Amino acid sequence: MSAETERPSPPRRNIARYALALIPLLVFAGFAVVAGKMLYDQDINGHDVSAIPSALIGRKAPSLALPPLEGSNTAALNDAAVQGKLTLVNVFASWCIPCRQEHPILKELAKDGRVTIVGINYKDKTDNALRFLGELGNPYNAIGTDTSGKAAIDWGVYGIPESYLVGPDGTILYKKVGPFDERSVTQDLMPAISKAAARS
Image (cartoon, rainbow, N blue to C red; front, side, top):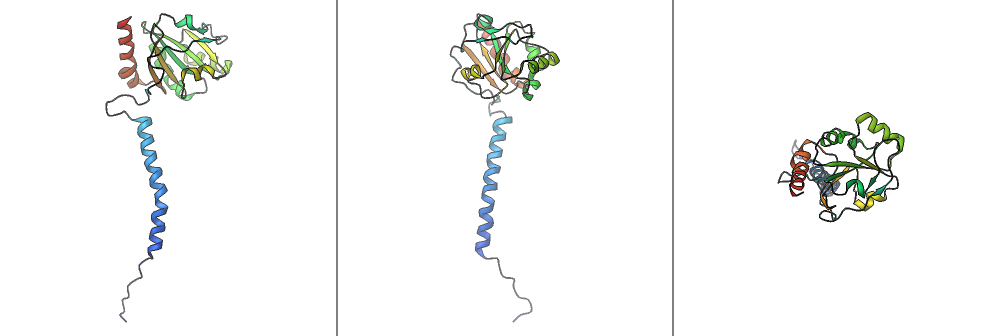
């Protein structure tokens, strides 16, 4: 027997166990990569992947008949508030952190005379919504309160913030899921506004 004896190789069963243990980790990592790209990246054409196609695009917007946000000195959100106007309908709430992030962009958009901005205040408390607008400013020409969430269901809301560009004839032209940022406004929203304004 030689002085140097070979160490026995690990049984194949142990190797197979290690391989099986790694499979769930690899699957999770794969899902994480795909989800990350869907949430944060642009597609290969440079478009915002959060501009999710909606079954409502190209169709008439749902009717609006929401009570006002009491104390906001802003009109109630009904069909008359948007009729004949190029309108951005923004679904927001005071408890929504991304809503807070996009709010300065909405304030800038409110200066664009081609588009009217209205808000659907989603499942919010009046005092909290008023505090939110008092702190950050009010870009909305009209605000409707949707305490039950029914209006959001009618509009096909996935999660807030969400925004819909509605033409003067009431047709939904564009939908944005998630907060606006400089890129999504420049590349997606503003071209949609310019195209709609040129037709009216």
